[in-house]
Length: 105
Image 1 (tube, rainbow, N blue to C red):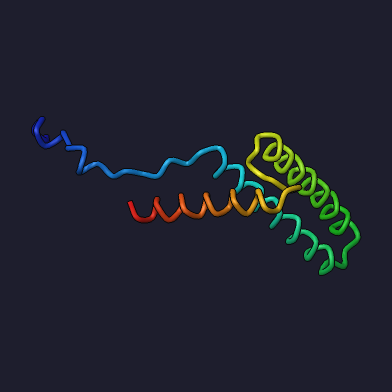
Image 2: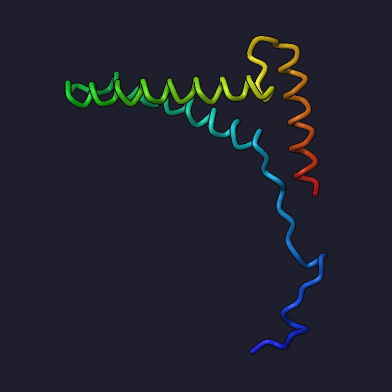
């Protein structure tokens, strides 16, 4: 059984994890949804069975709807600037700087 002094850790000994915010989660979800759309499109073109093709088309529609919902959420919450390229570039540069800082720490 460990002694009480062995159970305590100092702040320096505790591993610090980067904060994952709504923007990081939404961006990851958006990228994943886009990959799903792409992968399902490829799968449809590789499938010969009509019932499988029908299922994949249905899943593709769901993936497209999901991607749209995420994108609209991000636009509404000013996380994604789809209609202003300059603003999106500025936003992306800030995110890149934040990512670099996280890695440094």
